[in-house]
Image (cartoon, rainbow, N blue to C red; front, side):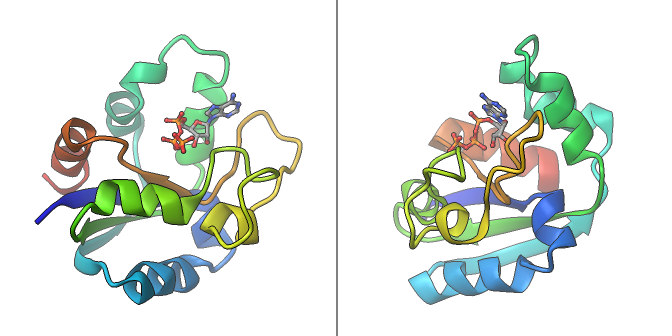
Length: 136
Ligand code: ATP
């Protein structure tokens, strides 16, 4: 069965939305396999966001991601990688569809980085790489 890495980003934890996000994942029928709360360091974030290095939002993104605790989830289910991205909604919370995590619960705060509550792996290769990073 397929697995994906989901992160409840620091804004999600700070706004006490971890339970609501977990509820949506479980209500959809996906299984929670592992869960871990941690403060991510630069080394981990640099590896996680290696593909974005050099982009204008990279530094603010890393600073945001190290600003507070993150909840990392290993989630399993048939086509869960695609399915979770659909639950999450598109990157920009202003235009993410209502009914999605970002569309219902996130908004644009006018900051340098999109504080969009969650991350989900975008392919089987990323899922494997990211699960190894966050769960060892
Ligand atoms: P999605 O692919 O659905 O956007 P993602 O989290 O995988 O989700 P990435 O493109 O990998 O998105 O970007 C990582 C994160 O960087 C985003 O979730 C967002 O927080 C931030 N980000 C991405 N693009 C921008 C941008 N143009 N301006 C500000 N922040 C951005």
